[in-house]
Length: 195
Image (cartoon, rainbow, N blue to C red; front, side):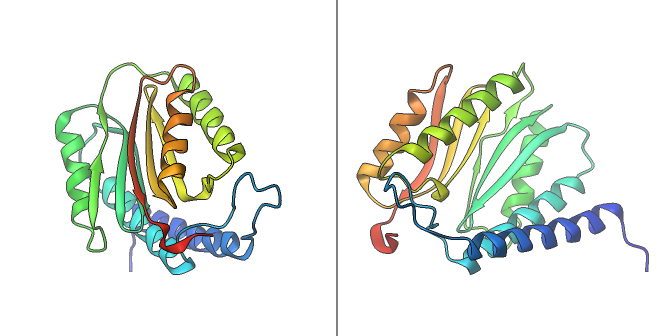
C-alpha cells in the first residue's frame, strides 16, 4: 500500500498532538500566586478532539491543489475553528474555509485569512509574545483558555472566558499592546466550569 507524504505527515502530526495533549493534561496545576490558572476550560477529551480537528483541516489544506495558500493556521476550540494567516488569492481563502466546514466535528468557522499584502513576521511575533506574557500575569485570567494568532498586527483570539470580568480583561490587555491595529475576538463566556 502506497501512502502519500501528506498522509504520513498527517498521522505523525496527529500522534504528536495527542501525546502533547496528554502530557499537558498530566501537568495541569493551579497557580499559587493567583495571577493565572494553568487549568484549562476544556477537558482532556475536548483537547484531543480539537487537535484531531486541526490535524484533519491541515491535511485537507495540504491536499489542496492551489499554490496560493501561503501560511494558514487552523485553531479549534471546542469544535469552533478560527482560520488565520495569509493566502495569495481570495479563491485560496475560500478553499481553505470549505475544507474546514467539510470537517464533520466542526460547529463554526471564523475565516480571518488575509489575502496577500505586506506582513511583518517580527512585529507579529513581538505582539504575540507580549500579549501572552501579559495575559499570564493578569489576575483573574486563565490564559490557557485562549488561542492567540497575530497576522499583520491584527490580533485574533478564540477561547472561553469564565466571567464578563475575565472577558473584558483579556480584550483590554490585547487592545493595549503596542502596534496592535485591531482585535478580533471569538471568546465565549461560560462560568459553568470555573477552575
